[in-house]
Image (tube, rainbow, N blue to C red; front, side):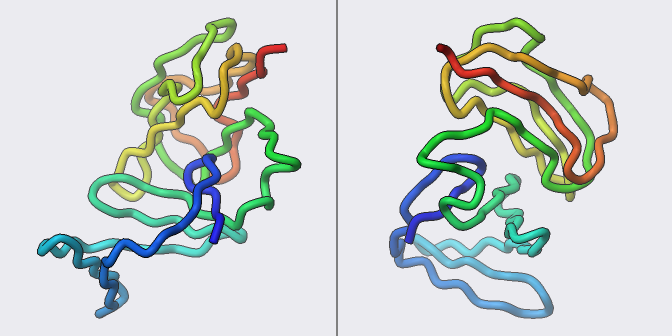
Length: 142
C-alpha cells in the first residue's frame, strides 16, 4: 500500500511490529522493545507521534498529481518554529532540512522534497504557527 509520509511517497511493508492499544495510546513492539505512540486523525491525514518524531501519513495521490509536489509545506497542527536552516533565495537539495516545527512535545523536521530554491519563508525561529499555515515554499529547479 502506497502512502505519503512527511511528504515522501513510500510503500508500506509488513515489518513484523505488533501494535496494541490501551487507554487511548498505541504501543508498538518490535525487535524486543516496546514504545508508545499517539495517533490523531486530522483533515484526512493521520499524525503519529512516535519516539520523539511526528509523522504525517496520508493516502498516496492525495497531495501529489502525477508524482509532482507543490513545494509548499504547511503546518499539520499548531506549533512552534524551533529552528530555521534556510533563507529566501537559498538553493536546497532533496532531503535537506529546511526548518523544525515542535508540536505535541515532539520536533518534526521539514525537509526538501526535491532540489530547488527557497521562494517563500513567512516564518521565523520562535514563532507560533497555526494549523495549515504556510511554513516554507520551495521552487523546483527548471
